[in-house]
Image (tube, rainbow, N blue to C red):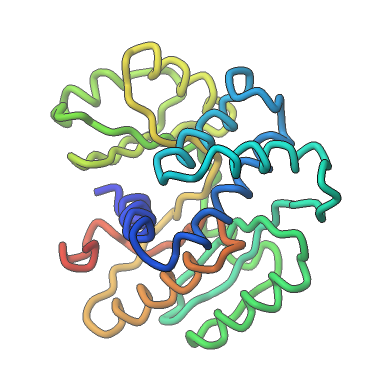
Length: 248
């Protein structure tokens, strides 16, 4: 099961209907800003930006907010620049965590993340402290749309694809980092419904937790997910072993 991504998306969808909407819009705006900074401000000429805008619309972000985020990427409005920063550390029960953040104040973000790690019996580490436990990968999220695992596997037999995790609601395709864009385009040409595509980290080995240990770790991960500067989160927790209620 494509556990972490599925869990993350469930959290996002829950946020559509509650007080997290403001924080969610902040995260979506930052992704739009970063995507536009890294390429053309035209979504049709910048795939990362197109995906970011589509996700913003899925969560009912007003068009004016989207336009303002794109404009900010060019330095309009006089607001502070948004930059991407990666943090690493250990959470409760020795969980290895890599956090990709987007912030206009790296000192503030580092301090707040250090507090969250410490509050949940973890510690924020130095660069490289846990990265060695992960492999850099391209990650493509796909909606199977009723297709079986066999059908999806056959469709995804593309050079550059390293592995596939199937779930009826969300499938994850792992690619070589340098092949992410090519595989993404090939899958789209084959009619796949891609909901996200990005560079990420995949744990070389995963840890299985149960009972109170699992509850403690999930509470920590959720606290990180809710921080407005955290864009993506990778850990070595084995989500495939999670009971169904943990994903609810």
